[in-house]
Length: 469
Ligand code: BGC
Image 1: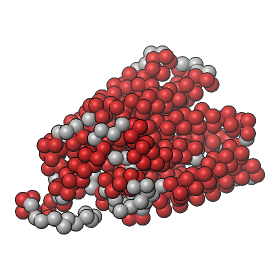
Image 2: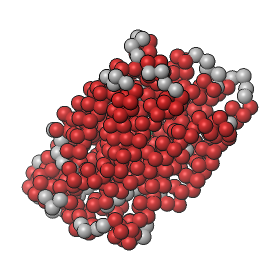
Image 3: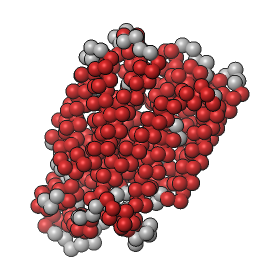
Image 4: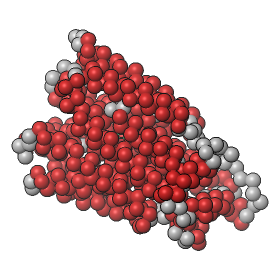
């Protein structure tokens, strides 16, 4: 693990042997990323868990098809709202306090949903949970980005995506375990209270981000936070933060547009929309259904195949986290989109041809698809939406891109079954393949390589009309 080297004159902190300072810093940033990324884990768990829980909800509340769709999408409605107001919330409360609040909401929401006595209450608590998911889906990576050093930021923020995929994978296996134990949907939802409490308690021990404190004019506390984080190049960091905050102190949304930052917003929104248009959540929420279409007639085999997809999603994201700061964002993004395009064309063709081995071929194509998503688009979108905006606009910018992400997610999730019924599965998958082509062109022309750049350099890049210094 390497850190950028400092060229400044030695200060008092240089009396500490540099390697020890750096080791302590590295340990801290990993612990911090781990705690904040519990928010990501809960995002994954609470969205993934519904696929298995639905079978039992349907039985217990005698749900119609439309009510089942409501059960799935209620959480997305909450997430949209969370993404919309979360930016202001975290600007007002601070990143840390907002995350503490979300931990509480996750824990309460899990217990209340699990004990809902009727379907209306169930929906209400799912919306509340969705709110916590929406807020923490951008706040957790943002908290990490604001506390991580440039050299490690990519991997550390992508760590949040890793925990999202861990949450999804674990929710599938938990579903399977409770299905086998014949215990129904309530415990599936209730166990999420444990990581919720973990987020709450963990965040109590962490510091507010230096960048947020500086933005509030609390310079001394910002310096203390850098000390608490054991940042080795504390002075350079402070200078960079001062510059960034001074340049953007009184910027309003319209000034944001005028100062050239609108391109950053376009980049973020484009990534957000394309991350969903390529159809990822048709797989995450509907994989058992797709396997059913492909001829896996037993529900448990379909759920088992889904669980394998969940594990592959997690393992590939792990690889991405390990290589993203070395390989860079663009190669992973563009390479991943090519892989997704090939997988979707294959998937459509398999359904169009209807061979006798459709089930296994679809499993193969789905695995290729999930690998290609998890190596690029999955982690890169969340990483970029937390690193392409200047400090003053980071919360609002990330909240806008996250809002677009959840809106497009909702659009794709509630239209998949109807599209499949009206256009047929092959055309539906080819449609998503078409979106991969558009996404590729968008990324090729708009998305910069931010590997190894500090947040302030990235800010200048946009302000100077997309030019690095
Ligand atoms: C997406 C989610 C998706 C997950 C799958 C995330 O990056 O935002 O919508 O369910 O990846 O791993």
